[in-house]
Amino acid sequence: MTFDTLKFAGEEVAALKKENRFIRPRVLESAQEPVSVIDGKKVINLTSNNYLALANNPKVKQAAIGAIEKYGVGSAAVRTIIGTMSIHEELEEKFAKFKHAEASILFQSGFTSNVAVCQSLMSSDTDLLISDELNHASIIDGARLAKSPRKIYRHKDIKHLAEILETPEARAARRKMVVTDGVFSMDGDIANLDEITETAHKYGAFVMVDDAHASGVIGKEGRGTVSHFGLDGKVEIQIGTLSKAFASVGGYAATTRDLRDYLGSVARPFLFSSSQPPSIAATCIAVLEMLLNEPEHLKRLWDNTAFLKEELKKAGFDTGSSVTPITPIMVGDTEKAVNFSKRLFDEGVFALSIGFPTVPKSKERLRTIVTAGHTIKDLEFAVEKFKKVGKELNIV
Ligand SMILES: *Cc1c(COP(=O)(O)O)cnc(C)c1O
Image: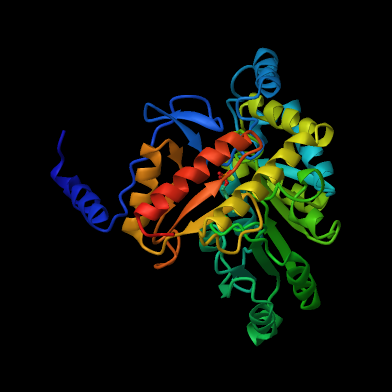
């Protein structure tokens, strides 16, 4: 099928290919597991966000199946029409408790949660959204949909944040929101949320932290960055995703009862896009119970994290500033990073290469994420292959 009117698409694809930016994803042919079948090959999978290795856990699957039996497969309505099921409300209450917040509100994804909050709260040109330069794309898009102006501060630079908050524009703003990722998704470093919160409050701003890579991963029982810094009750809005440690798909904002109720009446994704299948809520309730009652999952995740980081450093790799299960391996060149990933895959290890524009030029890398489900044997095998291919390509 050809349309003269769509000829530009072929030209765009050719241009992307020339710039090494064309994406053809590898395909998972098994469940998302620490050792998965990808493109017909069994490999050590160091690329998923399946932190707790619960995406194919029998207990969690049983919970999802139980919800399908009881509530069916879909809600067939948006939350504000008749898509609010009792299991959605049960999960909202549980996430509120988990985050030590008054209430929480579910959205269809982490991406949508960020867009919903930024767009709903930054609704006037007299508001001001202030964002870390390395925040996730969904925060950037949320800021674009907001009516307020936005200011960007240098990564984790509190002095710069304070300078922005001191400008006449910020002082005159009706509402000011400081937004940061809790754990930064490409570098695996943690936001200095204690300083950010103190600085924001000093100038009358409120804080939104996006804990996509932190919920179910850091803090007591995986409660996130706020718990990690002992800031319970001090951070106004905590965003979480259901699609990483929580092994399904969706997101939420945990906050005050009033703000939750406000978002539930005005947030456009909540009003105009249908609610999640009930099996998703059941999946998350099961994961929450495991986080609270089975500390071994988190312990294994962090033991594996320490092991892999240590071994990669010993082998001479530059693993950047990470202190979380996200461990980048710096390469510094797109083509080299792509080759590194390809050659590792041939050897039985999958670690995705990340290039410009996802990360800045010269910061091209492989990004690894260990899970609670990898065995030390899996990780030893992977490290051997990293060393072998790393030498071959003159990276170590
Ligand atoms: C993954 C991610 C998101 C998006 O979450 P989804 O639930 O996959 O839409 C948002 N913010 C950050 C920081 C992320 O890493």
